[in-house]
Image (cartoon, rainbow over all chains, first blue to last red; front, side, top):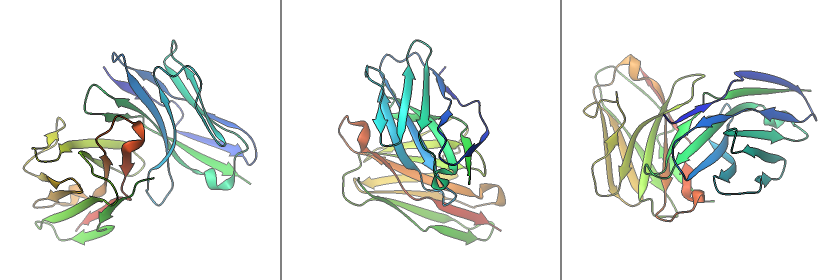
Length: 115
Length: 117
């Protein structure tokens, strides 16, 4: 079964600290993609970072990096130097290329940055 | 990046009426569009996948007669909630994907908040 697991319902982090949001996945697909999205209270889904299953290097986008460990089927998001504006829901998702590129979503982690 | 719009942003309707939500890709051709539903403090739930010019594929448990999806052109898909009831109140989000193989080509609309009284 295809599944995304985010085990942290919520996290409090002090401003300027780094934070790691956990994501593990289960799939039988050979080729897939892993995404992280941010959803602020406004509701819009903001794309943060992507990792392809065949990418050997961990993806980085500014303050965001993805710690991809394929053997462990984990794709944790690392946010360096957290800011107050990082407070939001964060969703990990897996793209199923063999199924019309549908996204399978995790339950999300609510991140709150404390000043 | 590419832009996807949704209209309306929010809507309040009476029980028993039908509501149409539009999803438009503004600067690219969307061969596939996805419709999601999101309840408060929950994740996105895929309702259906629609490819231009063909019938939508609904996920298990989603009533196709209740949630009518039309993807008549490469830039427009509509979701009609028929005979809406209070339990249909939710946040509805669409996403659109272009015809290439790049992951970059799936973009999300801003969502529509539906409240049924």
